[in-house]
Length: 212
Image (cartoon, rainbow, N blue to C red; front, side, top):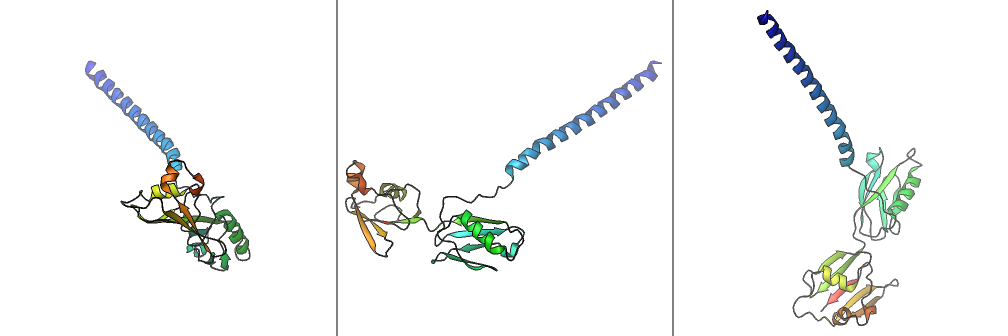
């Protein structure tokens, strides 16, 4: 009798263990799937929102996407006159507009050709808001203009002065609206001492800081 019951008992235990193992495996897979779903949502690419503040200018590179219209979606540069060229629409003024304003204008123009167009404009590269730092600095060149960048900030961004830089004779070259050019003197030694703070002007797009 023992020889009969013992194998039967062992078989039942093994069978129960297998059932429990399958249940645990199923629960683990289900938990993994439910855990990975939110992760997939978190890591999904999010389309960049167009800025309400940035103003498009000449030289900027724009990515224009028209939903479900691949032939009309493209990357375009803003020409020196502030205009861009798009299929169907042709010439369009982009300079002076924010990305959202340009989206609205393209959408308006496309309504004659596309039913309920959905347009997204993303500024891929900014070249219209640059400044130049020239002369006796460690890294002369063109730099993106931050909102509140001053002459001191620009010099620091360019790595500071090289030996024998004339820190009292720096000047800013600025293009005026009428096409003329202004020369704004800047004395670095005075600025860092807090003297004549008005000379540490807030920079504008296109300004060139020259360090003799």
